[in-house]
Length: 335
Image 1: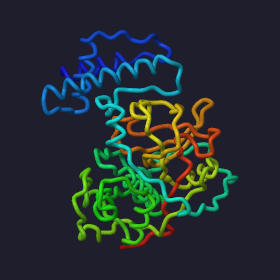
Image 2: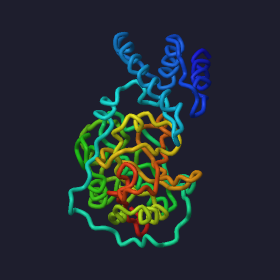
Image 3: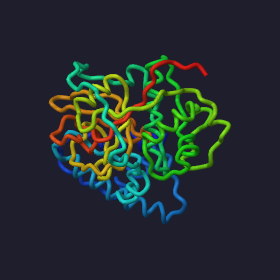
Image 4: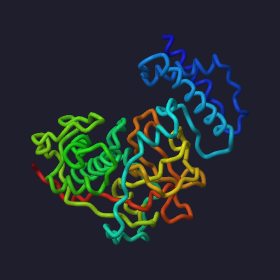
């Protein structure tokens, strides 16, 4: 009951709207926020010294959040799952995906002038599995590859099956280090498919390939293609057909502490994180991409982000339109 009251207190403290005065928080208030955050995220530290260290980082992040949220922005920051780590720790632990080598891809000939829906959300159409947490493994590429395969399989067969990220870590890349989305799609095709999450569950670390489970091909694909590069209209046309894998630069502190709304903050094109574009839409006068992340449902909008769409830079916000890739599945193959 006490824990519930602390969490409710946190919600009340963060109910202020944008352009509010910067909150003046007492040490007692901040400590209550911290203790409530620990309960909410089931955080337990090794010792008192570590807890105190994390408290100081938490305070600094809270100050940054408060200062941002008093401004007139299209998005707010929050005490999300990353509130007790520095931006340097966040970058070193959660960002790590490699863009394809130059000259290694061919653009799809998708017609970017095709009439497509003004908005789409593949969650509403039953093609998206729940958000998971990648942990300290640089496996966002595996989560993205799997999410796109889960989606196209559901679109073609009607069956939404949660697939194994661990198989890609163990049997494809054989490492938790940064990797390519398209290489994992190549692996799934060459392997004859991929096992289920239930049979080969995610461990957030490399544990060695289970060759027996890797033969349990629950879902197959026929290959992969690249969506039109540096062309948000062409990308929109492809996302209207199926979720698409993409790379973004998640380097900034605002990305780390994103809470809700349309992310419009400046970010570059040094892509370091893989996400899945599961839809798009417009809120007010701002167009956005709807992306599924792999940092659990206590980050962003229950694990999702709305990222500004149709900006002047052809590569898109955070470089999202530069390396879009998707799996191809023409028919249901019975195993």
